[in-house]
Image (cartoon, rainbow, N blue to C red; front, side):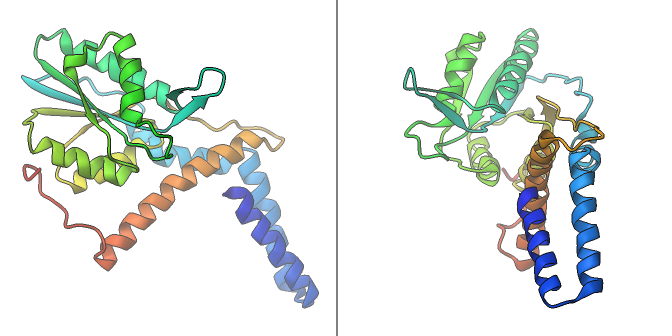
Length: 253
């Protein structure tokens, strides 16, 4: 996405030069060079990531109640060609590990602890994220009887909506929401929209790399952060246009 923006700026520079709009061309050239340097050096992605993650850097000390749910959000699957089996995608392993860790902390209190895996077949692989992630959780010691699959959601909005529907059949005192650091803020917003008061817990934590030379990694990180910002913008626009479902009050779910 960041390269597309830079490419568009480059095209605009070329177009203005053809039209001999010298001042406009000079201005766009400065914007292009500045953007490339600020992104590649890590300054822009650092700002974007801090905006998304800073409130979630410290993981909360959860006071487990009698009836607890830990919601694991899916992040894709990956086919391993040599075995023709599916594994969780890159961003998923941290979420799965954190979910298992939270479950073990909850289980120590000898209360009811359920793990809800929210993730369908968004990539049309013929297998759901919930199914693939469940196998990993079982390997990490989470019992089958404490796992609930939500296998129909294909994005974060549907994660929240369908988990909310699931909660109508289960009355949980605590709902712990586990996702990646850069994704947890938007996830919490969507879950709140559907009337779920969640305790957000980030799994991984992403940081930019400050460098004198532009790094491809910083462009990739910028794309991840921009994806989240677009999600916030879309949510606000849909609310303004009345395209989102009505916001639910806590307790309605």
